[in-house]
Image 1 (cartoon, helix red, strand yellow):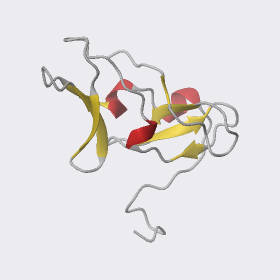
Image 2 (cartoon, rainbow, N blue to C red):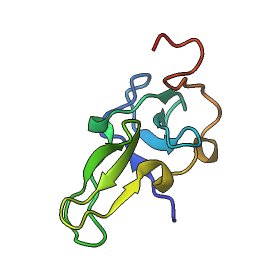
Image 3 (cartoon, helix red, strand yellow):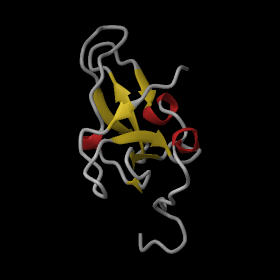
Length: 109
């Protein structure tokens, strides 16, 4: 699948600039990385831009797959894709900026 460049709907909290959504880890974790300084930040559903369905040309919904991974789903034809599979891996676009995932050692949850 050809990778697409998704820009977060919210600016990065570090520099107030655009942030690109990238795959942070194998398994589907995504983050939004500041295009100014490269710092990595968590992403939530409201920060993911809406895309048009390639099948129906209708706006797709952003949902969570298995409660952890975000994906796009078309409400009409039900075509869906995991967002992590659509965007580049962080190391293809940025230098390292660690972001702990839920369940990592040292996180309180």
